[in-house]
Image (cartoon, one colour):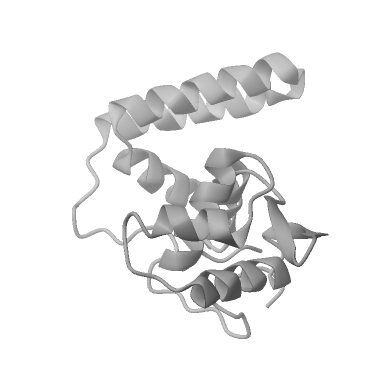
Length: 166
């Protein structure tokens, strides 16, 4: 399962995802240098690490590589959410708490997503009803500011914090 990307990994992957084409270390470096002072070798190391972790694939082009994202940012975000949700000992309660933290705009996006799934797969009728009921309940429920987020405080052993496959 994916782990959250580090700050610099995220900055690099954001560019790879936004540009949606094979990119070189030099291109990423030049864009990053608009925000911070950073060395070519640092970006090269980060991109090599992302390749080793399975986030990007690379193809040789002369003496350099061109890197391409293996998946999309939405797929990455979904995998992180699924990982957090699956670690809960009470998934329904975790979803209610999560929906309670959502803004009205986020809940509407959830409803839109469920409609798409429902349209694509008639088996989603049960999920649609449950998600709608939970989202409606979350709108009217108050989640205390001190309530821990789903999975908060839980520690998993044997997992490397740097990413998939590590």
